[in-house]
Length: 465
Image 1 (cartoon, rainbow, N blue to C red):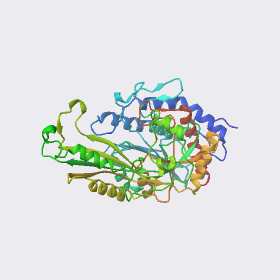
Image 2 (spheres, helix red, strand yellow):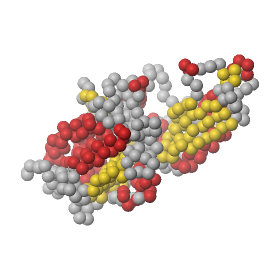
Image 3 (cartoon, rainbow, N blue to C red):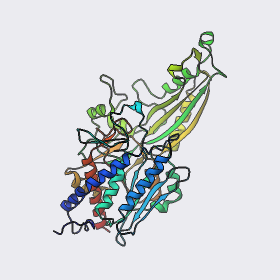
């Protein structure tokens, strides 16, 4: 066979798996250097964090995809998103009449505070004895950015289909890209979307995610007093705002830990269950602490609602005084089941919090976030092609998983191009990646296999054009 050259892979009709595997393998040293450079930029897009690193990351990612434009025919630019950070957009033309595939990832990351318990610098890509690469965003989702760049690099910038790239800068916070996509659907018009922001349960176990929970959030503020008063002089008959808030929050769950907000959409997961040993290891549950809720783990993780109190504004213990608290606020995050109407679920949550207020206390509930869930149709030809591509890359059949996490833009993409199929996968293995937590990491072999899977997927889509 003809050797693979820097011009990239020939079409699927004349190339095979071995050639694709060799090409991707040869690219890995450079792709991992790219990942190192991305990890070094603290691109936290949260409010109150400096914007300069986020803007630097946007420019760095734009430059990364400009390198893949070996023919000079691609359109690559930063898109200014009103109210938010720029998105990186690229459009690589394929053969005339070919389908269009949009590749999505995000370049922003979660914070990595010192008290989170990191054992290495989160902003330095660190190789450890297990062979994994550690650093904030190593998995979520700078690995996805590198997977997309590697896919284009494997084709020498001349893919067998039209390829659009959309790299978001606000996925981890309140995204402004959803409204932009809704107002500009032609930008993301495609026959398929490939979202590289997921992963299998373990390294080497390929998977496609077919359902995402959504997320809605609300802030509940309780007021009982015009000002703080002495807890000894007034405690007993005078209500304390923090105690009232605690009582409201306690109504979100039953004694087993199930979320029991009446009226929320809930289903049982119809596929295989999740491995409890993997769950306990991955989550870091302390020995002898019980899991909460009832029913299958897969249902609890992927297809039922789950309420979490993610923050409380109240006096710190170190500054506590003997007073009754006049005002206290909590933020409640509610993961909602696939198939749910996010706006309705938020209404249900708000009404529950308002009704649960004891003793006539003053309660104000503010709507904070509406993120829609998503379920992938499982009978499409591109999903079958994706599963075949995973078989090529991993050497074994793939599984279909759900995800308790959310990618809000997925529903927006589906609305912009209703006929397009959506593939959700990536290098973020559930067993070890520890996304959002300390010592986040990615397995470089998993990145390589996912680049190969995307190469094979685009080749397969290209053969039916």
